[in-house]
Length: 498
Image (cartoon, rainbow, N blue to C red):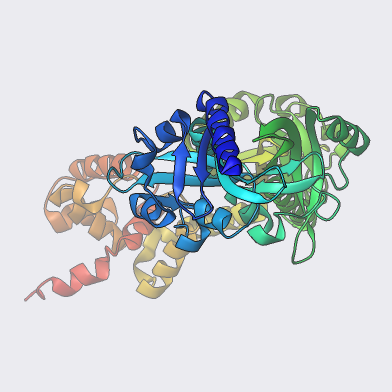
């Protein structure tokens, strides 16, 4: 009886001590019933008194659903009250508490168990001690969401043992690691500062828990090889642990782009040197020559030392008053120039006819343009000789076969620009005159055929030359042949004279 009285007195004093504590306390009797709870414990469960918690562990489970931080439900045998009753000692168990009568309400508790003993150090009851960490859990949850959603690759290591405790999706995606291959590993096993350009400074700052400035480093990948990154470290706290947040910038795309650019420029340089087409490279802003190939120096007679670094108009191989404005305007408008005829002066004074083409390019980030020359001197000379020969025999062209005239027209078509006029632009009388010219008739013969005065025919011929942009009968015939206007067809359509 005396022992029971002393025990009751001890319990009463214990209740007085813990009643005003900010931590919640629930006392559990040896018969596993809930004997008492202080105001803090009741408030943490949203009830007014201990009766609201339930009289037994089974009633407590019916009134409250518990979940772990990963949102998995706590099994009945793993409820803190059941684990304490089974004799298990635990601390820092974090659970989310949801009253089944009001699922919208919830709290996060950090729970530890305590075994109460009597004066003889014999078990005399149990206590559950609760700390409300709802605000901490909310902040932690927001941090977790932000950390995982951040597209920047990141890992967090604990400073006391240098082991990784967090990794986000960006880091896993960048490296190809699985989450379980990162969490729990040390910075010695997964060295995010490997080959850092200031590794000694980084290790010193990591050991002191201080900010690590940005620096280039390499991360060894699980499948072999490595990835070039920029890494930086920022000290943070996760719960009660001092940690280091490592963030990364993936430099691999830049390295690949630089490699591709270098290879592309190497291929361009080889093609530029080996091409037989005379080609030079000019700065687009100053029109200064920055490079020439061997074919260009051979075609113009200038050495590369006489060309490099000089403006085009100062060199003297192009018509300066025409070239600069024409080329600049074409490059600005369309980005290129195609087969425009220029006269080129070689260093020895010889003039050659060239078709000049130009195209804008970016070389090592600088705006430039390529200029290529096609020497057509011999071709033009051949055409001039051919046209002269045609004009010499065209006084009576009626004996030329249609096939031969078409071949002559094809020769001219390959070099001459297209005439602006069309057959439909001619009047019916001008088409008649053109057809008779193609038959080889002279002006008087055409006048007789059409029964008009010779002066009228001469006027028609002058207008024809003007519209067709030609200067001789032979050019008019070639123009007509190019457009399938044949005098022979006209004669075939005429009725025979009786």
